[in-house]
Image (cartoon, rainbow, N blue to C red; front, side):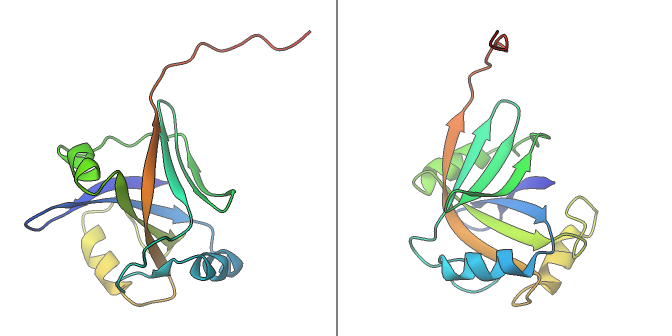
Length: 141
């Protein structure tokens, strides 16, 4: 499950908030690859990318799928312009599944409670798009 949002300010920051498995090894692996606890200063060169397609959003880190979601959440107005302003990057926050309801009315309060906690990790990642609607191919005979 994921949500696209804009972090407000003089220059809004595009964010992708994602809930993923409670796997502690995933968090440790990402922290070795430049990801930081949510709320700390982001490190340049964190490993990973965000792939946005017609029918899915994926977050990959070192060839591993961190998120593979086919519910392509609508981008809020200004999100893509903010991605462009950040040189094609967005902030990705991966929240341990069950730690916050990212779609609830108090999602921002729940995220504030996760600042510096082991429940969320973040990175600034490049956004790669594949927005071509592809025709399904016939299976090989």
